[in-house]
Image (cartoon, rainbow, N blue to C red; front, side, top):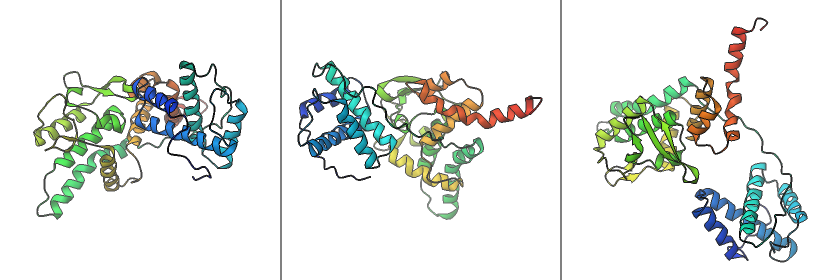
Amino acid sequence: MKDSITQDKESPTPSLLKGFLDELANVRMASKNTIRNYAQALNHFDAWHRQTHGCPPQWSQLERMVFRSYLRFLGREKYSRSSTQIHFSALRTFYKHLIRQGVVSETPIRDILLPKKAKRLPTFLTQDQILALLEAPAKVWQQRLETLKQPGSPEAYLRDTAVLETFYSCGMRVSELCGLRFQDVLWETQLIKVIGKGNKERLCPVGRPALESIGRYWDLIEHPRQADLPVFMAQAKTHTPLYPRLIQGRLKAYLVAAGLDPNLTPHKLRHSFATHLINAGADLRSVQELLGHAHLVTTQIYTHLSTDRLREVYQESHPRA
């Protein structure tokens, strides 16, 4: 979406912005995406204010009506509800920083009503679809053996099987999986130590099939078993860790091989993990811990996905169904 705002490369209050971004990175341990999005949002507001009012924003003097005007502008320019939420989340968080720094005494954004984000059902795979996907790397490798005289090494396919098994077994984010190190896999207790958002650590149970897949992959590449080496490598010879874009590209090919929608993302495996747990009777609080959600409300999006199971139980159990 494009609008008429032209953003300068530098904010007219660079020291305030730098202090805020430093706090996000070093104190709140925010992700790179959050830091980038908040910086872009604040610079956008800054540019809008100068274009609309002819001067840079004086943060200690801005009143609520200015932000209401900005909200109307975002609406006229057809910003999505999600994007609008991000812009105002950045502004709110920035004002909290300014209060802590003594620049302002209160925030003028309090109680401004924003358009609610649309509730979208997360896409997930059925258990049969998951099984087909988990079998896809071996299927593609077998096809390669049958069609090529020199098929090469099965290294990438064993790795990808282990990646998919681990995704579905633990429900972790793609960034968390790429960051796994040898020391994070606790074989005897069948746990994996995961470093999530905000540098928060959690322990995820991992199934035996996933561990066995990792073991087969490590045996093939002769993984040195050194504490700080990646679990999954893009290049085993150089110990280069796997990265999200490579996973997404490989996943697309396996989705096609499994007869599934190639546009599904690695995050859909996380959705599938959560949905299958809840449909099998897991409580929300446990699923929240496994997913690494900071707030239970984030996990509640999966509760309605068990409707089919509830309907099935109702039909089987209710005398007047």
